[in-house]
Image (cartoon, rainbow, N blue to C red; front, top):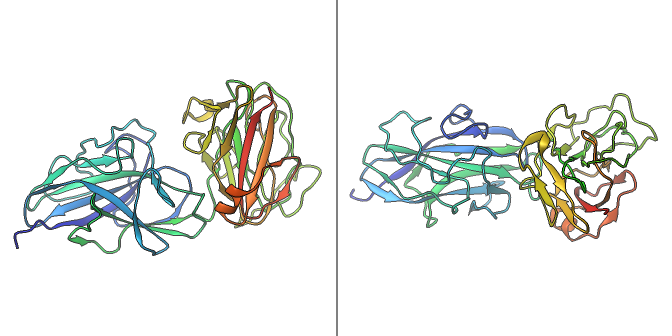
Length: 361
């Protein structure tokens, strides 16, 4: 046969914890069974040419809950290409990491900052190259237990000659990572969201010099102001000294990393939008929201389940007083189309929640 025959030979999931080729990799051909929503991870493939030297550009495709495959882009539903945290050049040339055959230099890396496909790569007969993609699963469309399968295709959408079985699969964790962040009229602050199935402390909205937001179970009100969203079986007037765990519990905090109680930690970067400012984006504890007069920021949609939710802010840092609103719905779309409610205390979520912070200046 004279036609090129490129095939997807091997794959491995990886963390976005270091530069290209030196980040932490899972064992090859081992699925991810508890991938946290809205958390950046990477996926690497070995592509082999078994018949004839050929050049091509490649793109990642995905299937949600075993449905039809779709192109993964910076705007796709369920899973998206996202910029990594390690300043890796899109389309960067890589070396062999997970393969074991004769390596053809010129492998590709794609996080969507240049486009949604790799640079042109030439693979000689009997050789292989490696492609890596930087990704996140979206809480706006995915929930616990959902599955995403992946395969590499040509950028035209045509499938490769062959694929290893099984294809890589990521299953959404039933417990989301928490995220911490800040929302304030000042240059510093954080905002976090967390949900817990146990009784939680009553909402505390204390004025402070900087702000933060969170959805999380809280053992007691903090000395400084904080905002969080947490589900609880009943609202108590005082904090519960030991919130009871629940398999349905969902906690998230934005803009803070050190010492957080929430299970899921997100940055404001790529997860909050509006006409306010994200300062020190992706920089851990120093990341915060700055809200000049009349500006606002809106969170990603959080899949809380139908539980009681509490919102706290300034939980892990001192912050300014802000105007705090929420909306919720039974689906991500219903949530995004719902009207805003001023947050005054715990409420019964319909399943999906968004938070809006507005400058009080």
